[in-house]
Amino acid sequence: MVVIFHRGSRVSSRHLFLTLGDWLIILGAQLAAVFLRLGVEAGQEYLLENWGALTGAAAIYMLVFYAGGMYEPPTRSRRVDFDFLPLVVVGIAAGITGLVLYARPQMVLGRGIWAISSVLILWLAYALRRLFLLLVRRGLFLKQAMLLCDHPDRAADMLRLLSQTPSSLYRVAGLVTCGVSPAAAYADGLPVLGPAENLSRLVEAHDISVVLLSVSPMRSHELMPQLRPLRYAGVEIMDYISISEELAQEIPLAHINDEWLMTAALNSSVMQIRKIKRAVDIAVSLIGLVPGIPLILLSGLLIKLTSPGPGIYRQTRVGLGGKPYVLFKLRTMRTDAEAHGAVWARQQDSRVTGVGYFLRKWRLDEIPQLFNILKGEMSLVGPRPERPEFTEKLAAFIPFYNERHLVQPGLTGWAQVRYPYAASFEAAARKLQFDLYYIKNMSFLLDASILLRTFKTILVGLRHEDDSFLPGEDKLEDLLVSGDPAEESHQPNGGNP
Image (cartoon, rainbow, N blue to C red; front, side, top):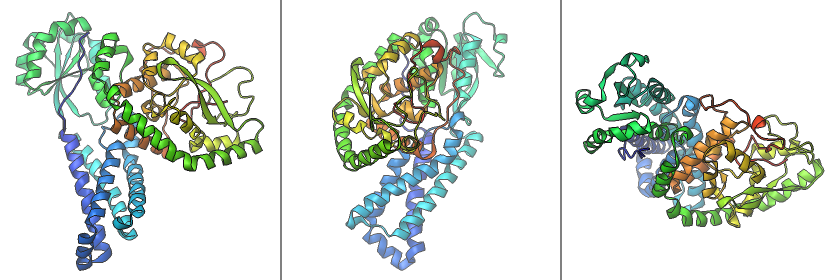
């Protein structure tokens, strides 16, 4: 298998357009808010005296915009998120800006200016993204691509993946074929430009900037002598995995093997950021426990008063390196929830207590896990920890499932914010694809993005995405023996009965 890690250009035209546009929007909205609130003369004086606060607010907005996913292409399943995202992200940025600036007396912004600028930023940021989609439909920001394939099914898989983006950032000029399948077999509406023997000439003739490689592993080895000169000439070479990483931000299990995982490990930044993550974990858990301990005590009291049983629920989970540890959560279910064996939790689970419903809704039942983080058993961000009795069973059916134990489990994670429910074999496999993406691309900024998305998930929720493309229809209830894991379908970190 030839491993292709897409690097691409550091600054794409899409990112440049949206980033520069947001900078202009944020700065322009602040200036407009100042002059609308104070007038021209008083506004000029205010700008001279408070330029530091305005610059700081702009920096906070841009950081939250980036971490909140404002520069990612909208997939078909996330189209509603794309329309609603500016409201959530701007709301979070405005809240952080208010807290930071009002906590520092020397950087105070007027409340009227802060409110007016926030409304203007929200409206203009949304308008900018609608304009972006309009321009994409007119052909701007698109990369001229060519699909190099050796079988109609592989070509269809690649085109289906590209179609997950409503306004695709790739314009596929046509197909270049190799292998034994005749050109007439590729009945997908795209013209067949020619055979792979003429690849270099076809790339030049059609002004191709991206070659989409959709061939068998053996065929990819044969094509390397033709692809290397194109790469040195500046043409991007992207396979199914690279496209999936860029558009869907997950690693497709059906397209990887041990060689790919080893190469990904050599390119991963896990070792470099592990110490930074640990320092952040300690600091955040200590800060979080200041208000967290009173909330734990109050919630525990309410649990005890409304249902029999302990306030804190303890459950063994699998941690770093496959080692078990005891996870702490506030109890949200009746004590007899698994009297007849563990079962998968449902969205409207009758076993959840009245208090437990609100604890789950606002993720308050997760607060005791700050003690797990402080002890070093967990991190703020990482794959969801699973129960050991089911990890072995899931690993037997899902390839590379144990790869997720190479990093610390997290209070929240990339899989949790992108695909929170897992009550089937397909869903568990889909979540692993997001976990693998996180392990390969782990970084401080990705962690910050996940934490912000967790707040967004709490505010607006996240629906179950379509997993119909995954192979097999077997449900975990059929695959696992009785005693299936009672997974929390409402929260990032799994369940407690």
